[in-house]
Amino acid sequence: MKEYGVVPEAWGPFAEGNHGIFTHPVLTKIGDKYGKSAAQVALRWNVQRGVVVIPKSVHKDRMEQNMNIWDFNLSDEDMAEIAKLDLGHSEIVNHDDPGFIKMLHTMKIHD
Image 1 (tube, helix red, strand yellow):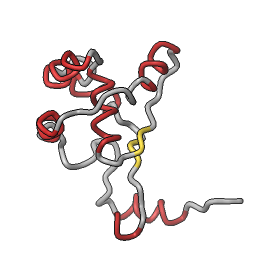
Image 2 (image 1 turned 180 degrees about the vertical axis):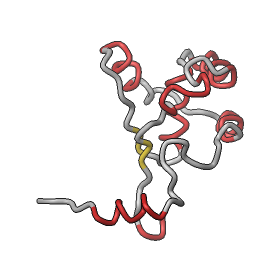
Image 3 (image 1 turned 30 degrees about the vertical axis):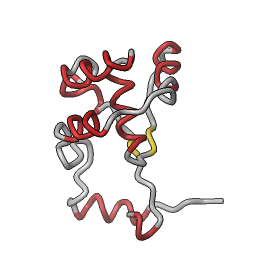
């Protein structure tokens, strides 16, 4: 992606609430070190890897919490520990599905 100047986006950085992400023991333990929630750790992990995050919430307090990730940096050890949790593929979209890829190619951006 870097070769083509593409910046990855996480449209669902909270895994749509799956895998107990908001209470995950690894994320919670790391968050405790920084005074942050598991959700904030997940967002920070993505941001530190150069991923644009688009967290969704209708709750004001969660929106504020999602924005409060710029006052800390995860250590290399923390980053590596979180990386072990990465499944290496999306559970939301099958990027190997020819039908999905074809649908993407039909989408147009209008001025």
